[in-house]
Image 1 (spheres, one colour):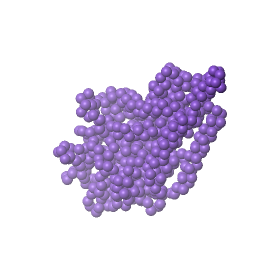
Image 2 (cartoon, rainbow, N blue to C red; image 1 turned 45 degrees about the vertical axis):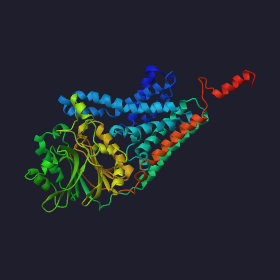
Image 3 (tube, rainbow, N blue to C red; image 1 turned 60 degrees about the vertical axis):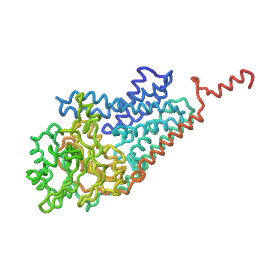
Image 4 (spheres, helix red, strand yellow; image 1 turned 90 degrees about the horizontal axis):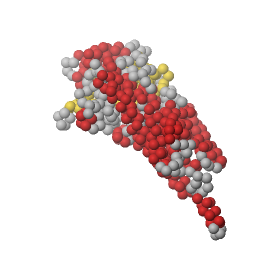
Length: 545
């Protein structure tokens, strides 16, 4: 494998990345995780420029991986194809190529460290998991489909996220998946047997811990708040046309008032539910102020994704992507909370280097006069009858530790997480299904249930173990509501207490392994003979032995 060069090596590198990408839901081809072992073998490159080759092969692996993971990125540009469709192929190429740079860097780090066969899997895991952490933080971060999120959320292996977070589970997954590469290495049989046994034991521990944790789950209490999630199934091409406001509102109103065995305490509408800013809808004299009041009954709370406008200190209007809490008393409708989205989507909600990009014809995809403005640092929101909730608007559900940071900042541990999202942007692609899986990992990390609302699917109620509650899911292209009791929160997880602490220990272990291999491993020439043995042979030949 190491001696392969040219197009065969490049093709195998791309294939390795594609295989790893297909391990993620909704494909769920877990044998594809062996793509990491294939890539490790290719990174042990020989030749005059091994470091450059390792970077390029790592980049090609990432190119294959992200081509599978983010091809849905072209779909938002097709909503307004006449004006923005031309950007779609550039977006995919730039996105996949740019994200693949992190894999190229990981390949370079691995090859520079150049560990022996015994420690290759651990060093590989450290290099790639570390660079995946960088991917989640550099330039606002984009941690879509981390290697640890290959497991279906709610499965036994996914429960390790409660201990080490998604980055820690990525390290574990990479170490186990890459271990079979040792079988093709030049190494003693006992080394191969030891590494293989360690990988099997690690996989067994992953399943064992997960099954034990899932065995302690309790069903929702019959006294828990009843929540209604409304999915109106309105296509993205229609939802932002002002002339459709009346019909869209009627659809949400009818679904909100659909008869039920019990009255919901909370009603949830998804991100950007109506094609108007909430300030205009609630303005004195607006017909929709009264109609919104009549949508809910006294004592109910409507949590509604909406665009919000405020005047900045400089006198300029600022636009926010917000979650608005509306509560009805006897007659009045009151705004009882507003959460403004803190982490915005680059190119979707704001354009990096906005002025420069505007000069060459690029602009963000928001249907507003200007880009959105990032809201303040997130904090939980208190609700009547449902305790404290941490909102996550769309993209924010990608980030491990987002809720934990809000808890530390405020000193308030919420009882649940609310994820409103506009996955209608992604059409009928793998995007909404992958987004659901990724968001469910935030439930496992924090040990908190998630209520997820989208306009076209997938909406769901998810327990604190990442599992969708039975009967509490609406798929793509479905119009309807979910009525479900809010699942109880398991005890706080280790991750919610120490964050990425275990992940840092894992990276330290990888670093110590690399250092130990460099100190103890004898260098081998092409014939597999160590330099020290060869030197002793020459000494004997010279008559000094």
